[in-house]
Amino acid sequence: MTSAEFDSISWRKGSRCAANGTCVEIAAMGTVRAIAARDAKHGDASPVLLFSVREWRTFTDRIKQGDLDASL
Image (tube, rainbow, N blue to C red; front, side, top):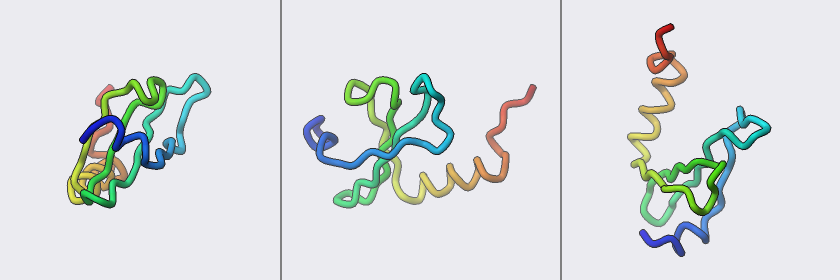
C-alpha cells in the first residue's frame, strides 16, 4: 500500500495512551480486510504494520489472557 492510501483512513488511539503520545494507533482497512497499526508518537511518519483480521484477533485475545505479559 502507498502512503497516500494510509492518509485516507481514520486512525484511532489506544485507550491507554500516555500524555507524551506513547501509544499505538489502529485503523480498519476495509478494502483489504486488514488492521493497520502505527506508533502515534510519529504519526504519518511512522511505519505501518498490517495484520489480517484473524492475526489481530489472535493478538488481542492473547493480550487479554495475559499471554504476552512480560516476566519480571
